[in-house]
Image (cartoon, rainbow, N blue to C red; front, side, top):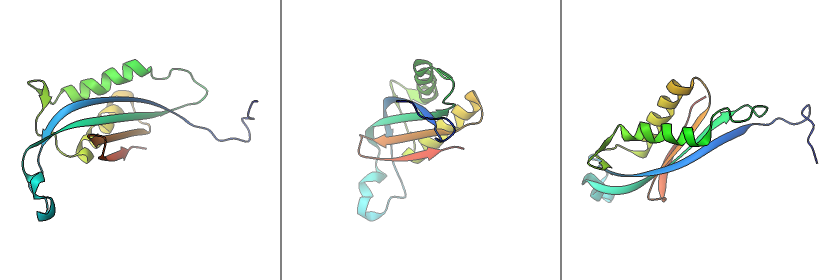
Length: 125
């Protein structure tokens, strides 16, 4: 079964995932979560999506995109892990803005989570 191009609006998003060990703290944390003021460890998960034209194949190659994302993250690695990584919000925004510098204007979806439980998304357009 084929869809008619003139009656369907479509979009495609390529995506990759990766993860890294990182440490951070939130010095202004409210008393209810005061433990976040201390340096603590997470496995940060990252999912990056890039909107591409449906009519084109392999506008961005998956494995190359993942390599670029890992290179962006590696700028923060010291002694095998990331120190003072900041919040999920800051990481997501940084990755998205770096991707837009590398690949040019477009829509980049970046999600960063702590241990697969909580996180943030940032989308450029």
